[in-house]
Image 1 (cartoon, one colour):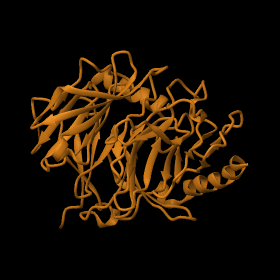
Image 2: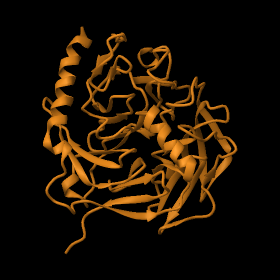
Image 3: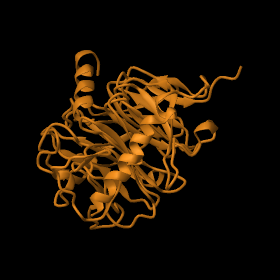
Image 4: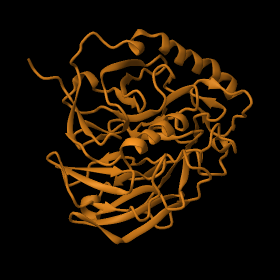
Length: 387
């Protein structure tokens, strides 16, 4: 994606993605977020300039929306392009033959396209992988494929989720497996602005939800584990704790980072569209089902307009990031990290690097972080050069 189409996508996402219990939550959430806005660590970088750098590994990709690492292939980077291809990057080169080409099935543009990829935990044995895309009618599909060698078998497709979409935006797109091998999918509220049909708080629809399914069990159904989401643009599991971190794109006021702890057994309601981050929309009712959860942190329009979720860093190369959740913003390219402190405000730090048009982070087998940008780049987060 380049030129006018890239600009249109950027503007579209920045506008439309930013894409009892209620009484208790409002003052607590407001205290968290606004205290963070005043905290110097949020608004000003730290004192050291070279504690993190971005190293370009490849460029020239067409509107990358995500990146995954294939079990058994430590040298390959598998990049999803919005138009419908999965490209393989090896030693800085984009291989000419796609790993999977779904362009004939995918409707791309704005917030639609090929949005998610996850390899099964047992991929080395089974060859299974899962993709999340919008079909030619603009509706959501989650489809399982089987790969053999360096290609995906086109005839192996099996649809696991087929969902009609009412509007053009807010598709979610993330796929990820938890430590028990269950597949999770993130879905936006169906689109338009301000959730006109109130789907975020409606448990009768899968829109605005995080769903999971035991894909290895015949007859298993999708179940809702979290709701009240506007457009979850990337979620991840902390490989050390199993906690689920979700970045939810706001409407006009705030971007938010949410958390579903690993020990959570019931439904969690993150508030949309009764809440946008910490802001309470008084005309919207809160569904009483489940636990109403305040965001871990939120930021306003002075800092960005479309959050991109990342990972809790568990690698070894960047000690300064260890144990911190790393995330960013598509519009400003800003990258932050935070350390959660249960019962207290998180420590949020603006990092010294920026990646314009940041669409996704990825974690390799060693816990090291990578990211992709809509400008066609794949980068690695690396330690500073030694002097």
